Image 1 (cartoon, rainbow, N blue to C red):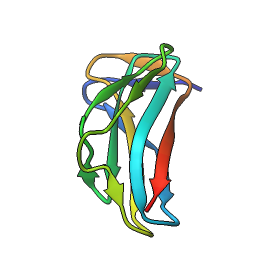
Image 2 (image 1 turned 90 degrees about the vertical axis):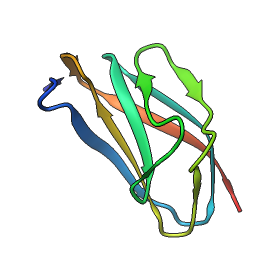
Image 3 (image 1 turned 180 degrees about the vertical axis):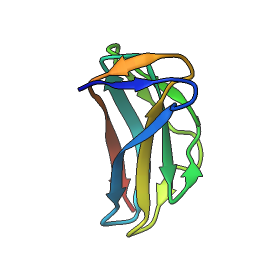
Image 4 (image 1 turned 180 degrees about the horizontal axis):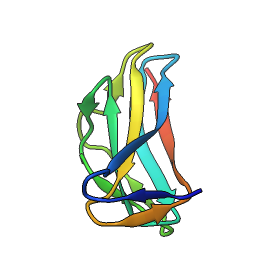
Length: 99
């Protein structure tokens, strides 16, 4: 069943990965069947840009800061909206390099 986001129930976490190595997030591609905001954090620190759009139009986001991680750090993606949106899926793919 679809998730319905509103201004009072705006965010849900969809992905959480414990990184098996140290590295850098070089690019992120997110998509959804709705119009959702996406926010990526590394152990609770928000990467830059701090907010971008996931929709049926896939775009590549290139992080400019706070995009490095150490082994066993948690990378999390939260999706949400400030309006009303109904989504049945949202996903992100990461291009990372090991350091």
